[in-house]
Amino acid sequence: MAPAHRIAFVVPTKDRPDDLRKMLASLARQTRRPDQVIVVDGSELAVRNVVEECQSLPAEYVRVFPPSLARQRNAGMQRLTRDITLAGYLDDDIVLEDDAVQCMLEFWEDTAADIGGAAFTITNNPQPGALSLKQAFAIDHVQPGRVLRSGFASSIMPQGTDMETEWLYGGATVWRRGVIESYPYDEWFVGTGYMEDIDFSYTVGARYRLFVVARARLAHFSKPVRADRQRLLGKWQIVNRMHVVRKHRARGLSVPAAWRASFGLFLLNLAAAVVRVRRDPWNRALGNAAGMVSELFGRREQIGGHLK
Image (tube, rainbow, N blue to C red; front, side, top):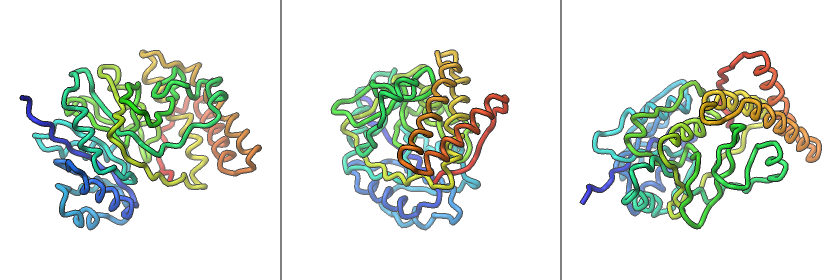
């Protein structure tokens, strides 16, 4: 019989010690605990003490400052021990169900060699709204897990069975060791790294199949984007997506389609601001406009910052 897989998780974190503590506690409760946990800290106030509190996990601490999500993920993977065969990324604000890691490992027991990555099912993902309007601008699609020619990706919602997809979210995924060694995260994405997960998984998907595992479940307690970061998010929605589209044009992504979708996103944010009388979508629309102007002038901006 082939030897059992040994699994590691890299956990980038920034300024969320309480969330990190809950996440590590959920890992410690697993019916099958991970073989290695690497916490990569980009916090203003270091959280080494939180990692040291969790004595029941084989956890280690790495400091990467100033923080950058892609750089933190790459730094963590460089610390894998030689016996690790599967390595995953976990956000610091998730809580895994007690058998999540065991269910994930059961998925990998008999997988074909052409399967490169698998995601946990996020049980509390919000349902996408205004789907028909978004489809009209190629912002979303009725089929989940697709990467559209515009660079937008359709939502991945909880499924009753394992689902093959074209992309995987970044903070709840497991990859073959060979994938990790061959495909580092693109450190062009700085700060929070908007779109870095689609870029990474879509790159891997050119060679390998990707799945979401129905029985491996967790909840993601994501904090809302700060009001003073909405304009930054809006600009990222344009600039970072255009970067991804240009990077993957050989696989059929289209700059004209991305422009059409970008203008559609601007209109939808503007409409939401008017109808709901809210400042957040208005500021995102302003950020969208700034991003489109930047792209029109060919600035190819690399935008840092954090959203929460």
